[in-house]
Image (tube, rainbow over all chains, first blue to last red; front, side):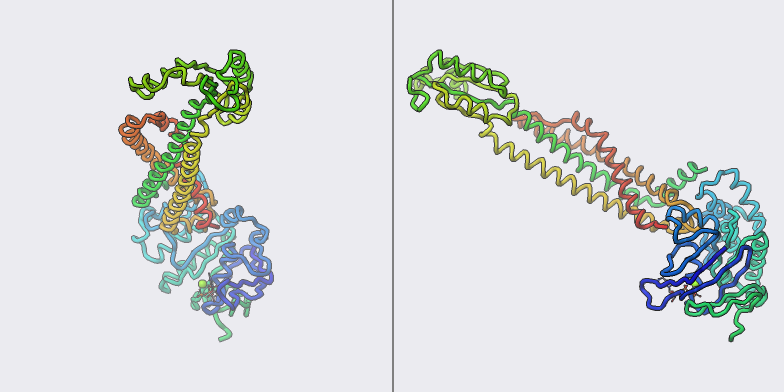
Length: 229
Length: 301
Ligand SMILES: Nc1ncnc2c1ncn2[C@@H]1O[C@H](COP(=O)(O)OP(=O)(O)OP(=O)(O)O)[C@@H](O)[C@H]1O
Ligand SMILES: [Mg+2]
């Protein structure tokens, strides 16, 4: 589903590569934790997968597409197959919960019928039914993140990328979000999650990929956060 | 859904960036007024040229009994000589019409010009030359006619007004070129200003556009609200600009210049009307192109 083949990324302003000859593969339906110290290249990995950045060297395949050969105008179609969730939720403050989720479908031109069918369904899935008309600032952090997950998932993507989705949440709320991501993973969606949250990684016992200075230093199925330390 | 979404997005955009929208409208209004002024100055220069072109003629003065000079060795022009000159002129392809003016008529004109009853005491008809007045097909082509009759016996002198008016035409040419240059600079300035305004609008909505990119909205879909917003502001602005132009022409030319300076015909609101579609089109087009170019740079995938 995601294949990195000898991928390096050097940002123009840096002299250390953010990713250094990284080779790895994520299979369809997998749940993968991306761990490593700050600056090790986790977010860079996610941005490359979305083709928000281009690699300096190497090949990337996502959902059967060679990103190098994917022309710019087709990039939006790639992103429709990938959901994204961030630490800071990225909701629109003046749109309601329903509108925030519907926004993702509207802007890719989906018909109203589909929106009225899919948005309530996904809101129920994330446990926000009954809160459709709230504004983001009338929600707790965990609820806001659920809205973000709903928005990422409403178009039933093949892949869900999450960059420290629990970074702003307390441990109890984080567990709720993790259960949600696990449920989404069980529908067949591939999930890649960058995180610093040790207890979550240790509890979930999923595949763990550890980066350091942009290099892969550990790839462990049913792994823990930091057995090297 | 799409249409409704786009419309509501434009409405929000226009409302939220009210100051920016107003700035955009003003910029376009001023630019279009200046642009229109440039066009009017151009067409005024054109009209003035045409006005004078139509009046350009060549005068072929013939010998009288007092004349000296190479062509007048035989004294006053003879009937045969006059006929030869007339035939030469009428046969020439560049000549449109030939009028004959005898000595009496020349004297009448002379007297009118000087508006002085004492003229008779100074000059008599037989001292004035008779002449042919020649209107040309193309006022630019006078050389051929002049040289065709210059050497003929009985011709004292050939003058063409083109030489007299040459400085005026050169000035008008200069006016046209500078009006064009100013218009061009104005358009460039407008494009830059509009581009900057749109960039600010895009910046103030980077949250939305960022999310749109993430969920896979096409560039077209992301940019469309901005471009339509610019187009609406452009249309509004150019309408104001056109209104300003009407007032300007009416006040400055209609009330002040035209009644006082009558050496040419002046532009009027009819000329503005003729320019209106172009001005509106220009206002919208400049806005759309400027925002399109800006957004290509600032809302890239
Ligand atoms: N846009 C950018 N321009 C220049 N350098 C960048 C850019 N983004 C990241 N970097 C650099 O690339 C390296 C990897 O950054 P990245 O954000 O991928 O790390 P990370 O593993 O996500 O860190 P964190 O855990 O703190 O989020 C860092 O050294 C960072 O400074
Ligand atoms: Mg990061």
